[in-house]
Image (cartoon, rainbow, N blue to C red; front, side):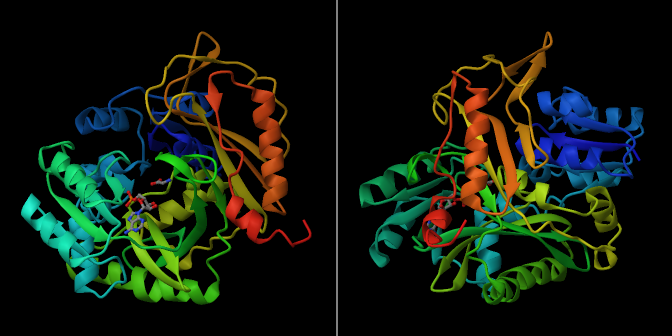
Length: 427
Ligand code: AMP
Ligand code: GLY
């Protein structure tokens, strides 16, 4: 069948590769894609929030299945729109996407269903904020209610900072909402658990740990993610049962009860404390760069899995994984996540020799006049599989050295927690 894929990041290049290798795929179209997808599929450069225009292309190219990568079109209702026009689409509805699109919606759902998460208050003005500060200990976490391109969460150590950050949001810093969720700070170790969901069932779709801070040893400002590895060893069987029983099942049941069953990937962002899981956030999509670490471990045909999910046949679908571990390191443009330049030439990509388990996923790149150029802050995701994280990381760092992009930088310590923890293991 002809398949459409929406998005332009490393996640979408990883999805595109898997989709292209499926026996069920005929032609693959990326809206708008990047230099990586350009090489294996057809890129169509349009605004992915212009649903009418998108529909025209989908009809023109006889696209039979649409896979949505990023959150924004989902939160704005792309699934409802395409379904109304009889196009098969993989991704949650506008209502279900509020799990990511509105922190207030997500927290209310947790409270109503006793799902473990940080204690919180919805605030609309300074008075609400001051009351919560009085009743709780610092640090506190200020979260913009709506989508904020990864910039909506601030961990505040002082009362002054809580008030400053909250007031900025009340005054309209983010277009999506002027409200905030103010919540207690959870300590512990972060991990992400993924499931694929149809209207009747859900199945495991990998675990990963991301590295959000720009600097080594987890320092500096937050980013979209500097690197990830999979699986997350902290999530053992017993903990997994708790995640499913306490968080995933009650959430999916609650949405079903409200007549808005979930369908799509669900990203469960967790804080693990004393072997208990606490929900930090839901995302209604795969993570980026978590997806680039997880998908190379998938053995089964992704199109078969996704297509069966849209038909609510997930239960009969087998999802098998390679036993190898995986890691992906993000090559960024100097200056990211602050100001950085675009249109910088990237050499050395054509001649680089990749072995069976190595992959270079493109993120913010474009291909013009037979040359690669940067087109964003996160540019390439160098990924590899292997037996141990330390060896995989060595391999990736070697590849990054060969790429030797003079405008770029990357973290050399991805996986430091797990590598240090297992320092006594024989690699
Ligand atoms: P989010 O945008 O919800 O993913 O939050 C971004 C990051 O902020 C998370 O990955 C955590 O590292 C951190 N964070 C969010 N909420 C909390 C919390 N209640 N306690 C501690 N850290 C948090
Ligand atoms: N890497 C974090 C995210 O995709 O939200």
